[in-house]
Length: 191
Image (cartoon, rainbow, N blue to C red; front, side, top):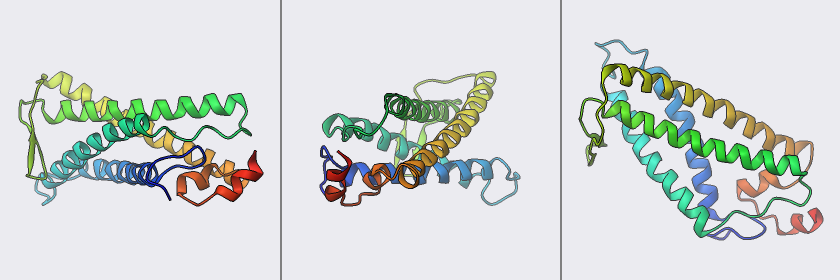
């Protein structure tokens, strides 16, 4: 597999980032739901939010890199077998996923820095608080953060179902491209 994307397949970097973000998003979602259920005297009451914030900031940086990487190494074009509706739907879904993820990061940052305290990434790098918000705005940011997280999970599940539909029903190479499979021989039969 190549590092950069080609006209036929995704490169190693794009595939790795895709799956790392996907796994991290689901892990962060589970961690977020779990940590808000903890009692004050639970040993993880303070540790879980710090872990959640640290992973969130790293994921934010990874998503910025992902966007830059798409500019440096554009993804392969859609398959010729896709209908216009599938092409537009896929583009809209990807764009919406990116926007939702960045909105989650921003709302999480606002929640984390509401009292003017920096976000300390794994005790190694403090990210300064640039904006402080009041308690009402913090609650609103928390609600938005939760609903955005649910939206990403639902949309990403639909995204996964679409990939499975392409693989098992349409029998095209859409899923294989994002799994990093060598597909040069399959592409010839697609066109």
